[in-house]
Length: 171
Image (tube, rainbow, N blue to C red; front, side, top):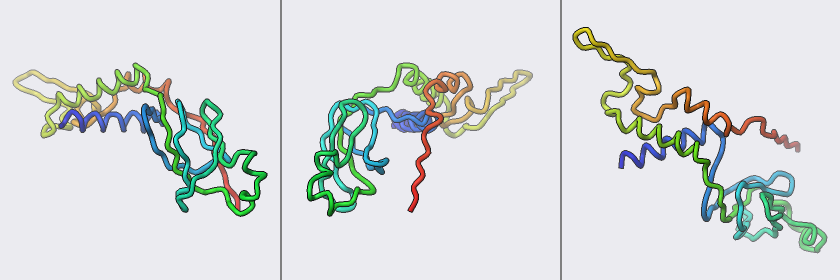
């Protein structure tokens, strides 16, 4: 049980640090459409898109890669479009095949193994001395939780999501 909790914590720490979400299998996500589309990495098929506020299905067209267009042109010119506003939040059900890279898995496992070797009761101890012998470790290695060492951060730096677009809405 402790290893499962550490694995969840380490995975969350890696996702927070990199800003990435790697998903595999059936997934459901609530998202705000940007203009008239939503984007996901590694989509292999789209199951459904539902307006979260009303529960109604939203017509869509998947481009076969990473973008799903809501209310595609064929529907925009229909009579129904005049009476329906673009939903502010949609629930997208899709299947993805975007596993994390091997380097990310290795770092996550290192964090878990290091944390599992530290007694939770003695966490935070950085230095210990006994009769002239002294032993010390860094802050991340002393944590009973899943701290990241500088070398692990360097590995994850190549997977960080930096410089993303900022969307500004006006009313």
